[in-house]
Amino acid sequence: MDARTRGGGPSRWLLGVTALLGGCAWNAPQTSLVPRSDFARAILHVYAIITWAALGIATVVVVALVVIFVRFRSREGAPLPRQVRGHTLLEMSWTIAPALVLLVIAVPTIQVIFRTQGQVSGALEVVVRGRQWWWEFAYPSLGVVTANEAHLPAGRAVSLRLEGPDVIHSFWVPQLGGKRDVVPGRVNRLTFTPDTPGEYLGQCAEFCGTSHANMAMRVFVDAPEAFERWIAAQRAPAVEAPGPAAAGKAIFARSACVGCHTIQGVSAGLVGPDLTHVGSRTTIAAGFLPNAKGPLTAWIRDAPALKPGAKMPPLGLSEADASAIADYLLSLK
Ligand SMILES: [Cu+2]
Figure 1: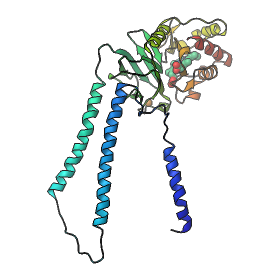
Figure 2 (figure 1 turned 90 degrees about the vertical axis):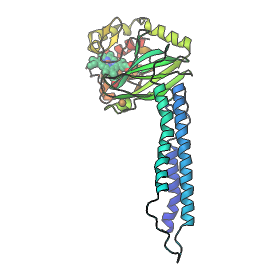
Figure 3 (figure 1 turned 30 degrees about the horizontal axis):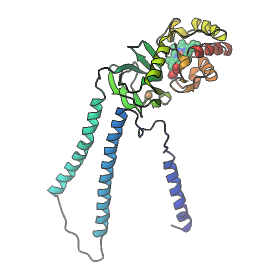
Figure 4 (figure 1 turned 60 degrees about the vertical axis):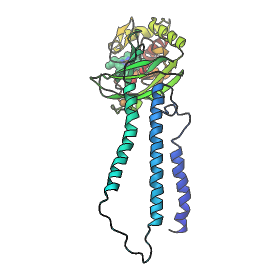
């Protein structure tokens, strides 16, 4: 190695470390290290067991390696070491030791899986339907249906009923719980109690097609009174705004939108998200766009141009019509 390449060593090393550390953050919204539910805490606990076990094993292996390298390295003129063929004790121990390690990992893991897929009495049931490429949240006991942004009350157990009408998705809100697959033709359960009000980001965690990466979700954990207010607002008929919103409503009602979207009292389509209170959401299209006039108008004009593969066809609306519909939808608080 000449001086030039040796000089490149430390800076390349630095570059590597920088690249690795670039993946770290304390305020990461999808961290699993800051749990905000009993389930997330249980996952972190299993994770800690595995990490400490791995660290312990790594230490033993590295120390043993170093000792062996130093003590048994070949020396000038040393005789050939004793040749061993088969060693029952050694072979038994390196079969049993990994089995023990697997057992230590498996017992708490399986416990957590079973504990969080049971039904808890008094839990709030929320039906979660993973669809290409958005999430539907229905609260059958409360008569509320919404999309991509769920609200849950802090301190109360929730039981998610995971259903998949199309392909396999996976529910994952790292600070609250998951991953648990959403499988067509079967019902999976996920039970946890969120404990801290806040906004938690999640993401579909099972590749489900073109816009899998654009299939995020938000869970708002509300204080109980705030949750009651949200439910009341979602159940109330949306107030009708005058002006451009009223014109937008008329255009919506005579467009193909009605075949795919439900707006209570206006339409009953079931292909896309329920839009009855779409104006109360912070984002649209599974967290893909902010719920604001500009992006919403662009979405209404040509959704797949924004979100690859989106199953909402462009309907050839004029800018003015799309803008009026956007005013209408934003008024649906
Ligand atoms: Cu997916």
